[in-house]
Length: 457
Image 1 (cartoon, one colour):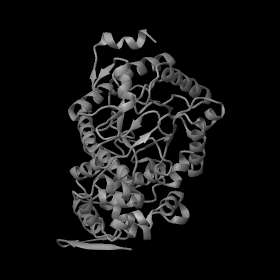
Image 2: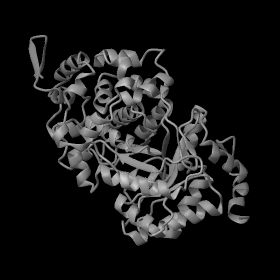
Image 3: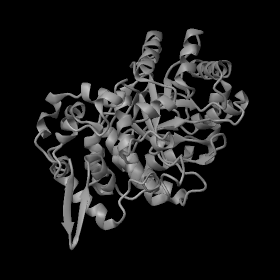
Image 4: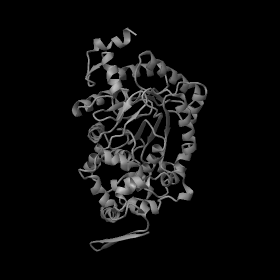
């Protein structure tokens, strides 16, 4: 299909739905790098006007990547719930935006709709929405998951405690973990990016966190963010694996570059479920994504990076994860040039993931060579809190000394919980009060009381 319109005296033509989607995307450096971005603001506006009139059903009839050549496309098509799609089946992309913003379109309605939406549909409507639209609609959606803590309940904000260390030193990791716990962080997961992916090193870290969690009876889960094949070997060796991690992307070719397939993810989930380590639920997968990964792998098929990102959420959705995290500014300015682009991408990712029924968190982050700073991250953090983000990152001093990027600190969770009246996961809140670390889920008790954690157990 082709699309054309005239603005003023200029005729704008787009040869395919794929091209129309890319040209309608708000400006970002990755799409310019890929050669798919609109050449001007006028061309972008023309594409958005045309996209608004595209029927949602066209995304089912005309896959952006052929069904025969991509297993992610096959997953999207084969799992589409036509009954759930029925309430919006006759809408165009523009009318769908209006429908999402209605008062009557509430959390119950959106939860029922999620299985009927495809990533391309939610990516398309996001391109027609302002930041406040993305925030408002996402704030209506609640996606609740559970393992040893319950994530995503209304009025709650969880934190991944991220005690990374450049040499995987157990003492350094333990010190950062303790620091984070004393700040009331860790209810989403205690998750370590290991410096090495070796089975032996990962098993050492797994046992370190497992001992800590069981010694202090912490209602949380651990995850070592190693490759899924490493996790499978660790489970085969009897190591205490709570959550299985994997970075995922929106095309089969990009996932192959990660060394994964849908069948491999299914195998890992089945192995983790068989361990039955959850106490309040069995959501045992943790996925990370990020705009630009398909382009980095040369596997974007001419799609814009945000549409590729939304397709990654179809992969995640298939495996009922506890957590999904878009690492929004991690790759660098080649894909998201400055604070403005990072903020927009974070709101888009959160919106698209939530509409598709995912428990979305965001790593509010940037690399030091991007045109961004911590004030930009404070802005995005606040907007995501208003939008109902399930969890954020907690990193000592907001500076990841292993991965070399800037994120959010333990302190940031207290800012957001105070300003928006949010609390940790209920099981973790009760533990914080029991250990005299915090009261009311938000207020840290004096340092002397916190020392009980070190002394008495």
